[in-house]
Image (cartoon, rainbow, N blue to C red):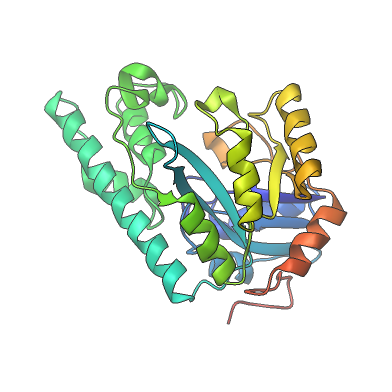
Amino acid sequence: MIDLHTHSTASDGTLTPAELVVAAAVAGLDVVALTDHDTTAGWVPAAAAVPPGLTLVPGAELSCRWFGADPPIPLHLLAYLFDPAEPALAAALAEVRRARELRAARMVDLLRADGIDVTVDEVHGYAAGGTVGRPHVAQALVRRGLAGSVAEAFAPHLLGERYRVPKKDLDVFAALALVRGAGGVAVFAHPKASRRGRIVPDPLIVELAAAGLFGLEADHDDHSPAERAHVRALAADLGLVVTGSSDFHGANKTVRLGAHTTDPGAYARIMAAASGYAPLDERQDLG
């Protein structure tokens, strides 16, 4: 069982990287990818805790945007096995994380202006040193009884619209080039998940494939059966690999580890194409 999309406390999950790899083994996974948002901070602690029988694929989920639409459309690239020390990619991710911090501070300002006593320090505390995001602001709202859960805090009258601040993302073509330049492999995360909002048109995916996109994530909780079928057909037409993943966030979402998985053949193609890092098992570490 291969799950190529999970999150830890290094971004917006609720399990630490070490807890995540242990939970992956308990769930019966053979391979798990750690793909926290715009950071590799979880790689070292996850690698140190990999239990016997589990392979860890270090990765990240990159916050991107396609600027060919008005307004631009946000999208995510799952980047696997890239060199985290490659200067250009490392600098770009650092800039995105800094922009996330500024965005969180702005949301806190908006909340405080309406008499909601949230602090930046509290939000950063929920992030536990990882990438700051709206789920961490949401936790502050849950603590104050303004929402019953992180998901409820994303309602339009809260972080869904009223207190939402746009975040700075990478141009998707620039991000793809950075991942490839760092020896990594890029897969488009949940590309047709219309329930999340606007989706990009097929011609953009054709352009991304020509620029080096390696795969499309088809089996995902936010894809309808029709959307999954569409992604598979598009991948077949373009010669891209198809992946399936849980997008696990711990208690922040109801989906379980291994809810969707990737075919071993697709996984083998991804591993063969990557040159920035190799998968890790219990006999290895990132040192």
